[in-house]
Image 1 (cartoon, one colour):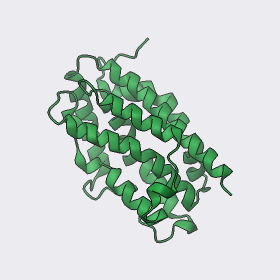
Image 2 (tube, rainbow, N blue to C red; image 1 turned 180 degrees about the horizontal axis):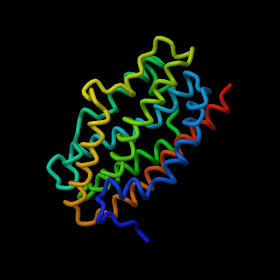
Image 3 (cartoon, rainbow, N blue to C red; image 1 turned 180 degrees about the vertical axis):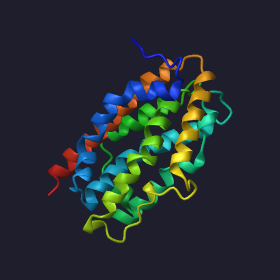
Image 4 (cartoon, rainbow, N blue to C red; image 1 turned 90 degrees about the vertical axis):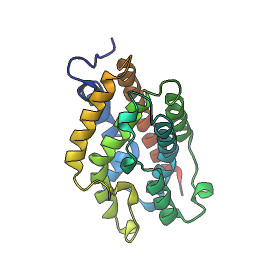
Length: 219
């Protein structure tokens, strides 16, 4: 049965429905390696390379739905990560990163799913925005600090984890959850966003596991 966003609101419904898969994502693949201090420059670059298609599709989709009720509430460019990720990839792997770092099938599938979510009324994009951006502002900032402590990352800019236009992340996250609730009230079927968020976490896990497998095979 699909979890209902009512009466608590969409933000609480998303949190409740995705709690288990969220915990799984934090313990899977390359993310677990980062938490355990077992990440190198190549593995981290490969991880960013395979997240980038999803961010590009998400941010194109959000921009395309600036006037769409249920989506426009979450069009917040200060959260956008595609540009910072590209900057980090150039710093990590050089200007030819897009040819040197493989785009794995899991990364392709994630980007395609987000692109498909932008179709129609675009409300399923909200699920991907919730999954990525609130995660980036929470656990993602912790991951950034851990990556930065790795000797092989010394001197590398970690723009992905830096939000210069969000000086108070906790206040911003509270406002973002309120925006999610407003968006949910404008949707014909907010339950579809809950379903899509579950899929989004599974796609994140698939990318994380695929990157770990690829780095394990590297010489």
